[in-house]
Amino acid sequence: MDLLFVSNLFPDEAEPWRGLDNVTLLHALRDLDASLRIRVLAFRPSITHFGRAPKRPRVQDVCFHPEYFWTPYLPKLGGLNHWLFARVLAKAWTSLPEDFHPQAILAPWLFPDACAVSLVAAKKSIPVVAVAQGSDAHQYLDMPMRRSAIVAMTKRVKSVVTRSNDLEKRLISHGARLGGVQTIYNGVDVHTFRPVPRHAARRGLELPPDEQLLLFVGNFLPVKGLDLLLQSFALVVARTSNPIKLALIGGGPLESALRSQAEALGISSRLLFLGRQQPSEVARWMQAADAICMTSHNEGVPNVVLESLSCGRVPVCTDVGGIAEIIEPILGRRFLVPSRDAEAYASALMDALQNSPDEMGLHESMQSFSWENCSRQYLDLLTNHLA
Image 1 (cartoon, helix red, strand yellow):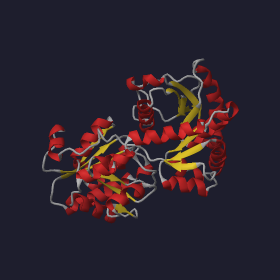
Image 2 (cartoon, one colour):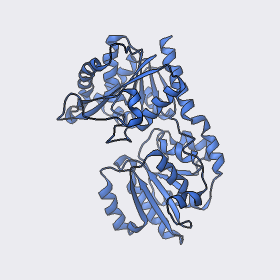
Image 3 (spheres, rainbow, N blue to C red):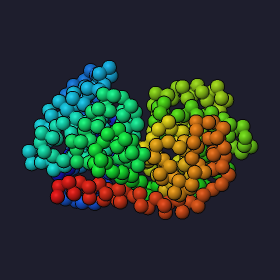
Image 4 (spheres, rainbow, N blue to C red):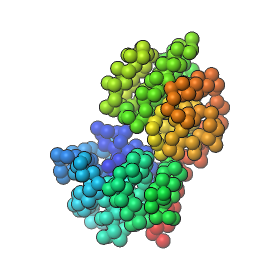
């Protein structure tokens, strides 16, 4: 099968974390079926740049022959961006080699990406599998023009994959085609994210063996609710006599505000800003941590939750999106905080710090979420559309 991947969520050398779950899926598909020929058209939104984007792929992704292009992005006319994207995609299509004939297209991110892909693919009679990742369904379905484009797209494509049942229900409730939406949870690398004795992990990172450690992994964006995390961590610091730190892996526009908030709360000396890290390093920090923190306003099913459980560490989360779909069958609702209440979240953190889980039990619960199983579901879906 010749499979074309089209999305803005694909990494390059400068942004190796961008769309990491998507490129991991492509590698898993390639490992599952060596006959697959996969090509990538990756896009970057811009107000000022046009044509090819001067991006270089990560070394491990060269096998997908990614081509990068700028696509116009007009903030004030956001509901029309899929039409602009479609025009750029039609031109970018000519970069594909003559012997590559896409039999299916995988298009993560509903708007404008999948909406644009569906317009171009319809003219070529190529089946499309769109993928809803989170905010593209949570936020955009509340915007009338984008919602209209997304719902119309769901009626043109073969399937829409959502990464949680919550996203699936949300799309259907807004008019997506019945029977055209299904949930396939993201995968987790159960070989990299696995339990390791905490003292050994801390020794490798040169961390004190007797210090408690909480960890956040993600973008420093408003949707991640990091103000709540810092407020709650300050309460934990006040309640415990144990030495404790909060490590933050990631980056984004809120870093300066977070540092200022930490200063105001008197916890600056207890925070470790670690920047963005490769998955193997994220795994080491998870293995060293006592618990993983997530205080998002909305989510699909974030990779961090799966990775935390696979490392045998409790994820303490706000109860949003599809997070409960994963955590509740394994840990109940004990570490799901139903409201944005710093006291309640701090209490859940204290519970996690004082009560270690069955690490291997958590890891075993993630075996069915391996990338091998995830890619097999995608391959079955893509193959069925060609039958």
